[in-house]
Image 1 (tube, rainbow, N blue to C red):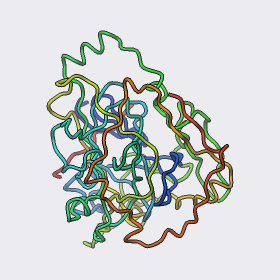
Image 2: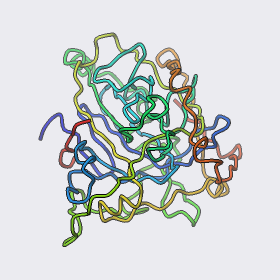
Image 3: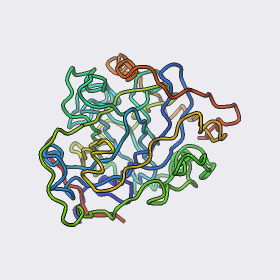
Length: 378
């Protein structure tokens, strides 16, 4: 079993060095104002591109990696709970760094910082565009100019999400392991299936087919198949299905939506602590639900629950408070990312009416892997 392989474990991406990443469906925020953290509504399903050689477009096959289905204007956040050892994780949106706004790089930089530090950073809901705030990740098609990639670089070539992990270097990692450095309460609060809050799973309104996943150590992920049918990892296309004819591929990327209160933490490890070369990397393709069905033969997830139904059901939102300011400092916002405009500027007004949560709905927070995923040329 290769040590530098990226693997899928259920709906979790496991990168070398103990890094775990899950992509969470969530409520889309209004593009005006600053909001609390929205809940998790279950994991996106993930499939290896190489398992669908006859139906995945050539461009996807060339870049390798994995794919997940998203609806137009659907929001997501990245959950890092369960990451077992310190790591620096780069997060790209169309090969633009979601932390610094700089072009994708194979090396780490501190000025500006182009990575998040795990497990200190429990999640990332959007691009680092404000002091103490981020702007929500929202899916949009390539070609409109609405993606972060399009607005920062002036062109839309890649789309998707890119991840690259750097562990501590051998000397620093040996010292960390020898010291048996105790986890802080904050780190323990981002356990293997954890996230916002500690309320455990809560019921959704009847119109929604899945159960939301609070950001909590005790709240487990949706059972496979609860919200969407999932084939066994590595499943082949349907027997007898002919190869799909060449056709235009509706590639998706990430633009931005509403602003929320969330910090992107500054690296406090001594300089020179991280390995010089990445331990693993992965390209995450975002595909439309029709493309997902065509490529995998599986039914896509149901459309996202609307905000009014969620709020009427009295279900929780979250406000994260961190009093460990001696250790955790918020990064300054990126000028390039701060200038990114929301997707509503391209797609028009949001037709999903906003219904603010009641005060009692806002929860204040205290402080075996499968086969390797094939990388490609990107």
